[in-house]
Amino acid sequence: MADKPLTVAVLSGKGGTGKTLVSVNLAAAAGDAVYLDCDVEEPNGHLFFKPEAAEEETVAVKIPQIDAALCTACRKCVEFCAFHALAFTGNHPMLFDEVCHSCGGCALLCPAKAIWETDKDVGTVSSGVSGGVNVFTGKLNIGEASGIAVIKRLLSKIPKSGNRPVFIDCPPGSACAVMESIQDADFCVLVAEPTIFGAHNLAMVYELVSLFHKPFGAVLNKCQTGENPSEAFCAEHRIPILGRIPFDAELGALNSDGRIAARESERYHALFGSLLEQIGKEARHETASDFKR
Amino acid sequence: MKITIPMNEQTLESGVCPSFGRAPYFLLYDTDTSESQWIVNSAAENAGGAGIAAAQLLADSGADALITPRCGENAEKVLSGAKIKVYRAMDGTAKENLEALAAGKLSPLSEFHAGFHGHGG
Image 1: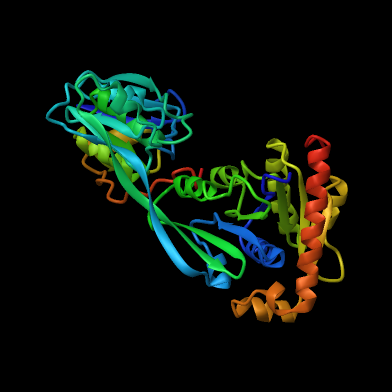
Image 2: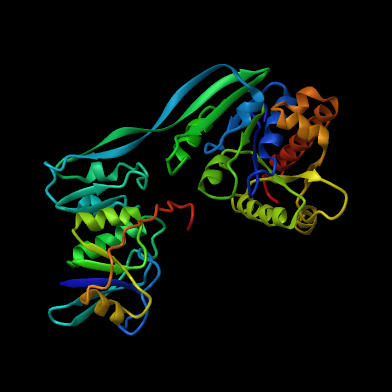
């Protein structure tokens, strides 16, 4: 583990559960860390980190460009496209670029060389520094259907060596964009709310990380006295509980002010510090036991 | 004139399928010969782009008009490219819809919904 950074993905079955709270505060508690905001449809980690010396790069995908005058109407491109991004009407192909997955097959196949690939901008990745934390933020352009290209670019920013931990703030849910976000993770943190709905959403991400054979544990957020259906779910499925975050006015006030609790409150610095330690222990344990659960 | 309708079952006496791209069958009715043909919608099981692929199927079938309760904006582009007129289906069987179109009682479909692109499905 010494020469490869520990990469931790933070996910949840729905939005508003506390993914950003947990991943931002873990990175802040670690002090010297890397934070990636993969929630590219609505990235908000930067609102807390307020990174300095921010630089922005454009993310583009390849889409086909078609010269109808060169087209011989053989339809090879239309028949090849597994995603049905091409249709054939009026004697030449018609492109639906938001359906295109940038495989480049149509351009390769076209015997008349009527198709070639061009860049289409879909979003940006910005990078900056906040304290000891390198902050990377992915932003999908409004109206774009898929954030995968932006997430791939973000993941390419993970250092290949060193011992600074990496925290990935995932998109909500358990669909393609989340699968993309967790694929390089050594460990997954599932953030769950103490409601029946929260337990249902926990079940969704539990299923996902199990499918990917990722080691994982749960963080119970917004804890109050009384029943916690998410805690019951963890007990039933033997999911290790890494930590509990209380439903607390001080934390709420700091957070809604865009401040990072682990940096501003001793109590929360301690809470996220011990959560970080717990994750490190679990991750090392899982590595030692060859990721088998 | 050839008229096509998305269908759940292969009979003129059954209702119109509420989905366009994911309908199991399309009726292709020839008003000149009164013959019915049934097209199996190979696009119905597609993960994405079902509307585009279904519209392609109809474009290739030589249909002149489509009667459907709803239709996506991508499919609409393919249909208009193939010069297929789209009419809004009314409640009732395929037969009743064909009769209503012949009597000039169906209006063109004017609203085309945005695609789901893996988000809604």
